[in-house]
Amino acid sequence: MTEDLTHDEAVAHLDADTVEDLTEGEPPADAALTRPQINHYGEPVEELVKIPIEDNGEPLVDIFAVCPQLSWMEKGPRFDFPRSGLARESVARMLAHAQSLLPDGLRLHIVGAFRPFEIQEKMYHKARAELKEQHPDWDEEYLTEYINVFSAPPIRDTPPPHTTGGAVDLGIVDASGERLDMISPFEMGWDSAPTALEGLSDTARANRGLLIDVLTQSGLTNFPGEWWHWSWGEPGWALRAGEPIALYGAVSEDEVPDWAPPQPQ
Image: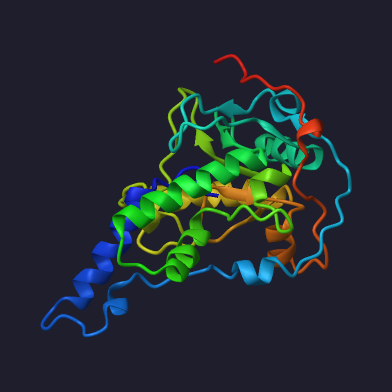
């Protein structure tokens, strides 16, 4: 999660809408009323932790070795932490199948897939610290619940999707390497993140539809709060697919192969 979403944009968009609605007339007596409403998109942490994991031992592979037609985002849109193009073998093959379904000249544009647990932990705490600094009036419980929506908490028993190798953040680029519009008339941020967003331009809706179509046909599932986040095998997939167990747990450090970004095409 959160690879494409900048935290400042997320909070700014939500707060602006909420405060505008609530500050007409007298200020609210309860300061909590000015907080943005939290939407878990059907995947609250308390439901994810109930899902048992029976890791099937599938290895991490280089998705670009499996499918050289994929495109890599050279500069990350969010934090400066390392990103990788490693994923579980089944996920890599699903991406290859999805790529084969795209019209000629279009390529899936990979932002990141597997993420070591230590990196996820650093990202989470950095995002949480930023949020706390911006909203010092928020209590710890609310702060945690809010951030857990767009940054998976570092819980080893219920591992964040990217730490399992079962999740990938991605979009689509054209033959010139330009990313297809998925958000107009919105800016990139929380307002434009939900997959089933109303008010998109015809172009953005069609492009999202294409992304959804090829990835769904290939077996991947989407976290409804972020159009770019897709997964298979991990607890989020199990919850949304109604599966009794997750097939991927967090990948241990000694099972992570070396990886280098593909050469620019």
